[in-house]
Image (cartoon, rainbow, N blue to C red):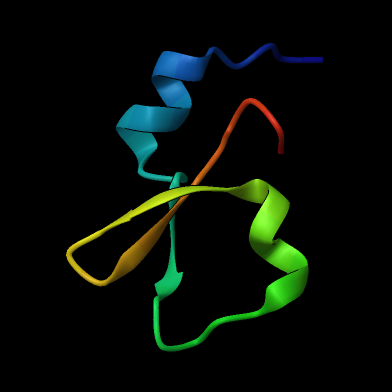
Length: 46
């Protein structure tokens, strides 16, 4: 099994989520913050 580092995930852009207008309350624990109208996913929790 291949191990992927946090740096590789960030470089791939997997931390970018949906636009803030597409809010799903169930995702609240996994959202790190928002920037330019897009939610940033907390990769450490996911």
